[in-house]
Image 1 (cartoon, rainbow, N blue to C red):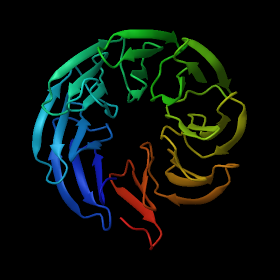
Image 2 (cartoon, helix red, strand yellow; image 1 turned 90 degrees about the vertical axis):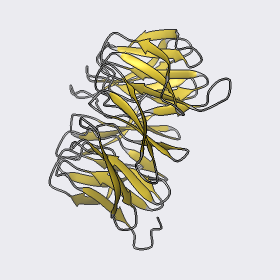
Image 3 (cartoon, one colour; image 1 turned 90 degrees about the horizontal axis):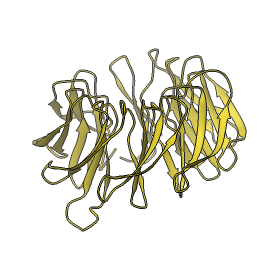
Length: 312
């Protein structure tokens, strides 16, 4: 959600721009594959990946095609961006099923460097302090120098990583396929703590909120942990797996579930404040801005919620 507009990708291969106030379509742009990637908006441009193996740059106002950058396979995760180390146009980072993390010039779509892992990359790269951090289906947490794309270190994660990492200082937090949620020290290359509960994978990406971490699990629950120790503070049960990534807004958590509902919970104790039944799985993560919650579902509909006083 940027500037009173909603930008979203769809399985019908299109990227859409809608008016936040009433959902009216402003433009659409068709790629040649499903658009699982969440769009990123930067400096009046929309950057988004497609299953057709291209990263696209479009004008945010009009949807006009600007350039596309080809990877070797589908791009399921969202792009991220960093300032160029020596000035100039920002750099765009995106992972692909070609096993690589690609760094691309935002101005012209030219490749700057590509870092090769050993398997698929599903999530979005996290960036901080000159480093890019991501996990993949090679069961490794990769720490890469943004300046030149060289490996700084990699850490064994113990299972496939489908989601994105969340960073706080030198710590990275992420879940994996072998039913564990972990905290890593990316400077030391070590594991701080491991959280295990029921034998179900974590596909959701975590949200950091002060001294807490909130993440969904395929055990049909939302988990809230102490950030420092991994101690369980609360869990909230839904009726379906929770692959969607939770969003923390102040003292509230918004998250979707494959049970077909969108939930709003208290961050303090996981109490349900509100829910809305869509009826089809909500595997995408919500966007929250200005009192609005916008989320897509597998019924092909984008939903917007908010108080009548919400301002776009």
